[in-house]
Image (cartoon, rainbow, N blue to C red):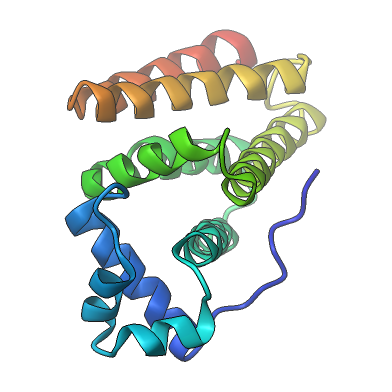
Length: 196
């Protein structure tokens, strides 16, 4: 399993990440420029370039930042109950994106560049591996506790990720946020059928 990045974001670095977040939501990946990020940052492009030489380098760091935020949100979950934890993970993956559909569009645009940009590809692969690891750990914990059926946790995890990826893609490509709700319900039905 690929570990999440060891990089920490604080001070100007975090402010640039937040500016990138806002600029991506407003302009999308295709129309994103360092100038637009600098405008959100409230400083010059030189101030952004002081930390990041290129837009791609900045966006690779932004993907690390998003994974760090996701990991933090998962670590903030206080329950160790496997059923509750799995439901919270699925909510994080399928309900939370409904709050920021513009960011979902920008991330899908970036994902489409992954075959051509090694830094993006590595980040998306790392993010996917980490999310699958988290899901699989919860499923295995539930099996060990006798809460879930004794199943192939890897297969269950890959199936859930297929539901997540499909729902997210349909929501963006078809501009249909109901796809996320459908995917969330489908994930629950799948969990009920396979794990309980």
